Length: 169
Image 1 (spheres, one colour):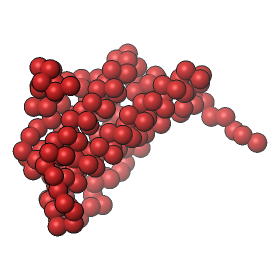
Image 2 (cartoon, helix red, strand yellow; image 1 turned 45 degrees about the vertical axis):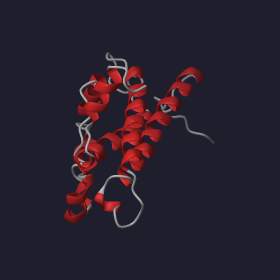
Image 3 (cartoon, helix red, strand yellow; image 1 turned 180 degrees about the vertical axis):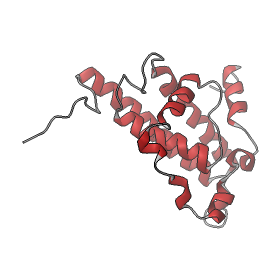
């Protein structure tokens, strides 16, 4: 017997389902791209892997492009990424942005007004405020992880400016 939960975290209709899966995929791809950016720049991986600064920059660029999809999809009158109840898109996107913010000490660029507003609202949920996910990492690792932008010699804001000036597309 299948128990149906309401509201559904994958959408109520086939169209909703397709949109939620698309947004979840964008967040998942952004997470993978963040790993490419990180692995090619962070001192955490300096002794473990070959690092290519250009690949890190490229990773940051494609990370922004995935966030653009999420930003465009958010309806400012809704509380969540897709609609008025949480979906798996929220559940995949939140740890991505939280990790970027709290582990790497990198803020979402200003151009992501809706995504920034969603993140600020979502992190106030009881399920989030009752946990300190970053506290599980040793201070030595956190010290190496902080400042990912400075480690690469570029900032997400600069990449966004170049995209807006049509220098990168």
